[in-house]
Image (tube, rainbow, N blue to C red; front, side, top):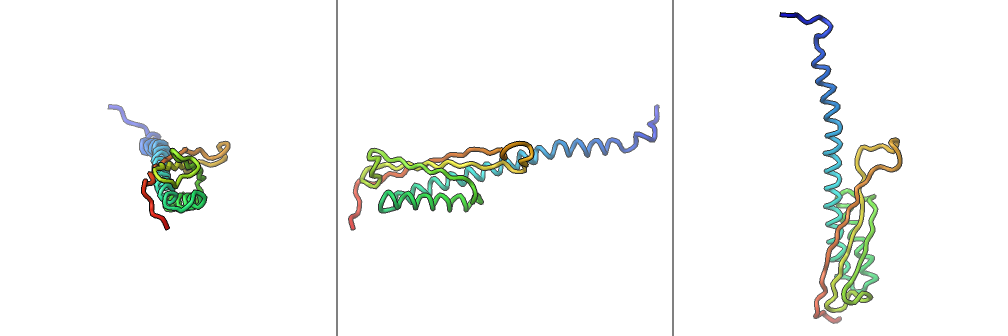
Length: 147
């Protein structure tokens, strides 16, 4: 049997520690990024649903647009995405200029993005981001109440 020299004692522990660190740091970043994207997906989906409902319940298209924007912002804020960019698109069929007439179908699309965590701007340009989109469709009934 051959005996190891005194200079090799404890090197396995050091190698295992460094290997663990080198593998765990990227894995941690991937997990945090997946959680951030999932949070953004929940927020954008809730924002589209809330904006569609707010637009449909408004008395006019102009007020509906303002209510939809506020509802979408609140839904994103509920998920911790206060500073996330928000692009809101509203379309109506078959009456594109009067969304609140009977038998209209309102479609609200929300576009946003989330920045991936722990990526410094030193690495070049802006932080990497992930684009998120969601849409919600709300039908307006044929029979409506008159005030």
